[in-house]
Amino acid sequence: MGSGGTIILIGLAIFAVLFVLSGIKIVQQSETIVVERLGRYDRTLTSGINILIPIFDKPREITWRYVVTGYRGEAIVTFRKRPRIDLRETVYDFPKQNVITRDNVSTEINALLYFQITNPVKALYEIENLPMAIEKLTQTTLRNVIGELDLDETLTSRDTINSKLRIILDDATNKWGVKVNRVELQDINPPKDIRDAMEKQMRAERDRRAKILEAEGLKQSQILEAEGYKISEINRAEGNKSAQILNAEGEAAARVKVAEAEAEAIRKVSDAVASKNGNPMSYLIAMRYLETLKEMTSGEDNKTVYLPYEATGILSSIGGIKDILKS
Image 1 (cartoon, rainbow, N blue to C red):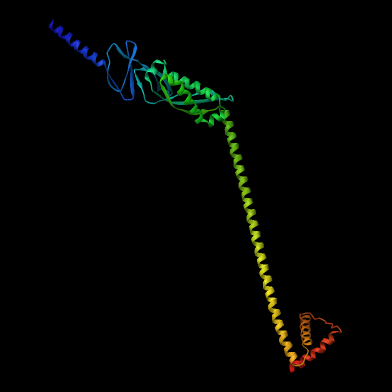
Image 2 (cartoon, one colour):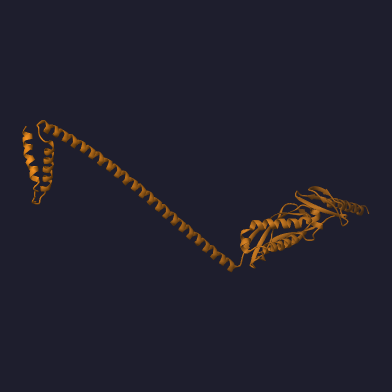
């Protein structure tokens, strides 16, 4: 009887300890637990040590999304229930889905969604399966947004699509206590025939731009060459002009000097002839005649010179030169 009572007491003590320990909940940082008392919402636990009343208080479980790797390396999405709610930002990588653009092109798109639970109570009581609801809402919203755009706009307007998706999803998930921070489109894969056509179009566009650039370069080269030739011709013409002006000025100066020298010589001869009572004009004419006659008879070929009758008067004056020189 005494030993049996001791065993009972020990059992009660162990039960009491386990009962007390089951009421102690340690919540980690950035996590929370929603507690229900007798089936009704009671309170939300914060990080640290919290005391619950066993049997009466019970954590409410939330459905969460997990991605596990299968035997063949494929990604398998599973949903599990857990009592703790993660308040950190969570990323969901959704599988590829087919969407149709405004110009009726079927395209594969997969998206990344970054969201954060801001109100655990709403996340539990306003929606039954929060991850599934977010995934389906993202897929349907993505179909609606892409359906308003052509394929070219879809490929070149990722930032616009991301911004529009984020605004729509954030507004729709606000009543679930969720804040959508960012939406990213990972891959946009049009059909193979469309990709081939786009590559041909891109190649043709690059060839066209290359030909335009080559033509513009040739045009610019010809313009520069023509301008260089023009400037060269202008400089050459200005140089010839300057040279002709200088030559003309030089010839004019030379003629002036020659004329001045001849005038001085004539003056001296005239003075000399006049001092001997001679005729300076006859002397000068005779000298010019002799110089001309010398030029006419110079050369290797034999020449016959005919003197006009009037030249005898000139020859008569040559005799007077001898008298002048003697005197």
